[in-house]
Length: 272
Image (cartoon, rainbow, N blue to C red; front, side, top):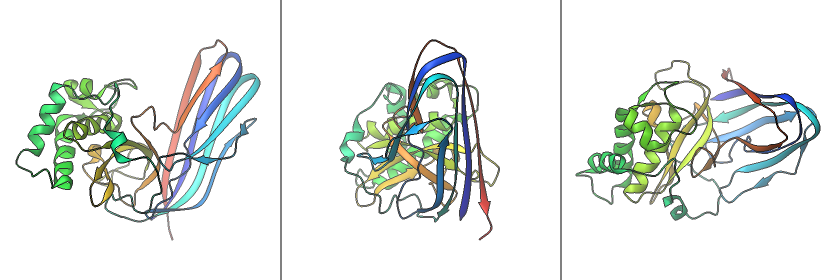
C-alpha cells in the first residue's frame, strides 16, 4: 500500500521564549515492511543537526530555535510504500539487546491486577509457545480496557488504565508491555501512523502499538487497541521503553510562558 502523511504540530507561547531544543523521531523506520519514497520534516526558522541512528535503530534529529520564539510549526510530509509482514519487524537493524526491554517504568510497571490478567491469559499455554502467549495477552488487554478517548491522559499508567477499564492506544500499549514483562517477554512501545482501524473505519492517524520479542521471530507488533498485528496500513516511526521514550517529538524550552499545543495528522492511501 502507498500511504501519504501530512503531520503538523504547532506550539504557541503566550510570551516569547529564549530558546527551544527538540529531539525528533519523525523519520520512518528502515525495515522490510516499509520503504520511504519521499519524506520532509520542516520547521521555519529551525536549525537541524545531522541525523543519527540510535541503538534501537531509529533516526533522530535535533532541532533548535534561538531568539524571541513565539511559535514553533513542525511540518512532516511524505510517502511510504508498505507491505504486510503480519507484524514481524524483519530486516530492522539495531544493537540493543532484547533483555533491556524487561525493565519497566512508572507507565509500564505491572501491579497485581496486571500480573493476574497476564497469568490468566497465558494459563494452559506452554512457556515455549511465546507467540501464542503474546496473542493471548493482547486479547486480554483489549477485553480489559475499552477504547474510550478522553477518559485518560498523557501520564496515565497501565495499572490506572486497567483499573478504570477505559483508555486509548497509549494505555493498551503500556498495559500489554506490563503484562508481557510480567511473564518474562521483553516488550516495547512503538509510535507511528495508522491509515484505518481493523474494520476499515477512519482512525486517529497518530497511533501506538507494542512490540514483543518472540524467540525465533524477533520483534513482533501487537495492536491491542485494534485487536490485530501491524500490517500495510501502519507506518512505523520508532520505539522506546514507554510512550515518553518513543515520543516523535521531545524537547525543552527556555523561558517562562504558557504553551499551547495543536496537532493535526492525516494519512491517506494513494492509487498506485
